[in-house]
Amino acid sequence: MSDVSSRLQFALQMAAAASEIILKHYQVDGLLVESKSDDSPVTAADRGAEELIRSMLADQFPQDGILGEEFASIPGKNGYRWIIDPIDGTKPFIHGVPLFGTLIGIELDARMVAGVCRFPALHEVVYAAEGHGCWWQIRGQDPRRTQVSRIKSLGDARMMFTEPTHWKTTGRFDSIVGVMNQVKIARGWGDCYGHAMVATGRAEIAIDPLMSPWDIAALIPILREAGGSCTDWKGDETVTGGDGVSVIPELKEAVLSVLKNAPPLPK
Image 1 (cartoon, rainbow, N blue to C red):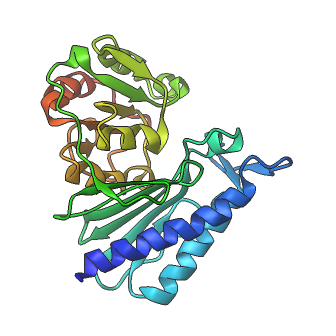
Image 2 (image 1 turned 90 degrees about the vertical axis):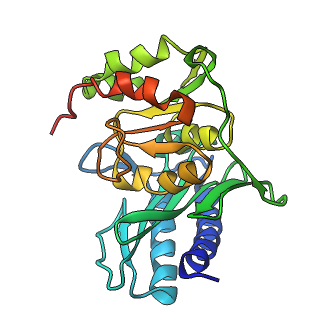
């Protein structure tokens, strides 16, 4: 087993272990919600899940770097870095909506080479490693290889999007609506769930006007191995672009032609 493959298998184990912590807090009365410095919410589930993942990594891969949403980054010594979002979609989690996920991305020499996206409340996981395809497991069944859909026309596409508040605060309302007006169906199934929908052929486009490295890192190899792409709005495969779009190859040019004209993100 290669170094990347062994890390992917360990990422799947960590995501499953983190799910147990997360579900102990899910749909529980009296969940304490705090606000971080950027006003985004955080709970004991977010912190507990990331603490567990970091502890497991320290034992198994102590030379690897770590970048996570909730705690300070740790530099690596061997080119590997883990990029972690313990709960992508904390707001849905807080309100008992099951579309939140745990994201674990594996980076090697500044390239995303593997990723895991696990949905604890749905008992689903989508994962991929470079050169090994994208896989989708539902409720403990055998994983099945998955690919993006092959719709040819933007007018037949299904588009997923995140909360409209960010459209306005980033000055990108017109850009997102510009794509939305051309598709067949647009639904607000945002955060990582929308991007996983693209990877599993259930949607063709997922657009986020604001993404941190831990929001997008795991999705990049997942979409790539599923036959699509997850890039910033300029079309670059990067974790630091600040925004993100997952799209099938047949529609990539049409979607990016609209998004590339968006105003830059506010600093």
